[in-house]
Length: 225
Image 1: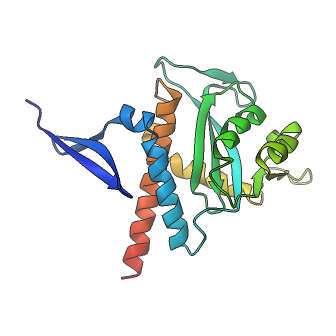
Image 2: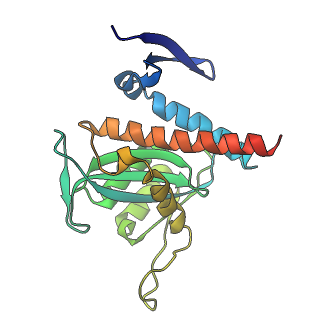
Image 3: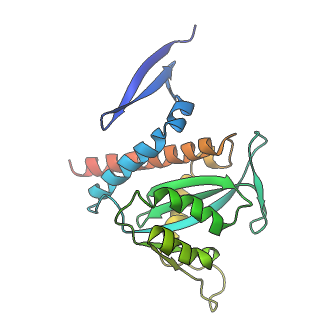
């Protein structure tokens, strides 16, 4: 018979159920996903890590971008990104100026960045009271700028690539979100989208960022001893 151990994880007074099977940790994925536990833990660690870095707990500026990834044969919604020539889904993320994840929304790859951005920003417009400025690439230009200002009360600033430079170019501010995608790309579970539900895809992205932030907190604590 399998050997199960049931316990709970406590984060700021909130208890989350966990299961250990033969010494390996298995979270109750569906429960955590449906109760938005991943988002809560990410938000708590995000604030605490910013404080550890000597910053205010909530950011005043952020960077927005998306990443198209292929899906596997697992059933679930998907679409075709004609620009990137990828059949699958988009990971739309908003990060602060040090690259920490504020929110992620996964949707089909055929949804344009301007429309996907609204799905992201509508969810956080009341979560970060100090947020005033968002940087994004040219894919978010146009009517979205006015929408962000009127609906969210923020400034959406487009960081454009110089027409005079050929080849790779590091763009101000935008490199921060690209680096975050690089961090997430180190996790094999995120090499493609393996999940049936987009909510599960979001959960695994939050889990990866939580792991990144916990490791950083450990390094900060060890350096102060």
